[in-house]
Length: 439
Image (cartoon, rainbow, N blue to C red; front, side, top):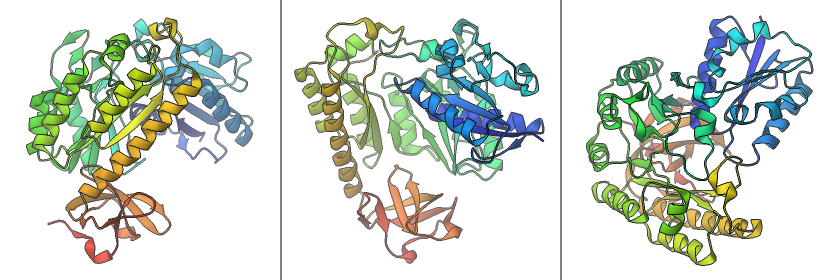
């Protein structure tokens, strides 16, 4: 029985796909093992969001060959689609598979027999037209369920359409079936994921269904306590979806809504499909219906043409907005994107300074949000996340909670009263009796 190990770089979507591919191996009789357990085969699922993709890939390959010198190393994922030849030249890599090939790697790689030359199987991205269903299981307390892939938007900074192809989706019926399968394993929370999930509904190039209707259907699936939307574009987060979430049985009051810039000038240069006024409208709608809702924001600093004044426009916009935390990305040039050809390049030092300013702002926003919720009672799903004698989990509105470790709490939903913020920035439940069964 050959041993296979997996390593995933990047997003929740990659985790869902790695998990599904690992189950394919187990069904074929392979033994899934940890990275350090001397595997015969390594599958490395890569990301391409930042310029460090190549460095990370090389580092993981080097570690793999150190652990198991005679192993067969396969690279898949977004970086593999974008730069297959470059990856094939990394010492120790045996095969590179693109977006259209990665779910067929067992059949394509002939028992993983090593050859003199690296095998490169990466079609043009136009060939990636099939939607491959995927979800993570047995990896974490929460399951990442892929409902959509690819993107038709073509933002100036983004390589995702080049790495994953056109927007395409599963069907509502198939997603519901997957949700039922997941529920049967005892998982209590599903996170819906995709490249542009608000664009759900496109099959074979035609829009057949709506994301809102998927939300309605999933809310009826018995056995799942929580459904969480991982990230959704502001122009696709409709009032219909927000209003439904406010009264939903299972969708939680947590939204992650990419902004990228608080300056309309930069939003237009980026090719985004909204302006800041629409973003304010969405945040206002959420907070009006769900005052305790958590709102996370993606923002990019240092985009070409972002002057000091335009950056301060973004900073002040975010500072005044009723949001809960930021994911801050320092802009990095990506080949074959429009932004890479733009003038008015922002120096790296300025990009770093701006990134640091927004990360500090994010911590202030998060602490303010946590403080506003102290003394209130929420349901926490405790995870196998133990540190310094404390077990951790998240409330429905995405507040990270620490409680005294008790193995009986793992993968359990408990009502807690949020007591105080500890020195690690988490909300602490100080006494065990504050944790009790939900009835």
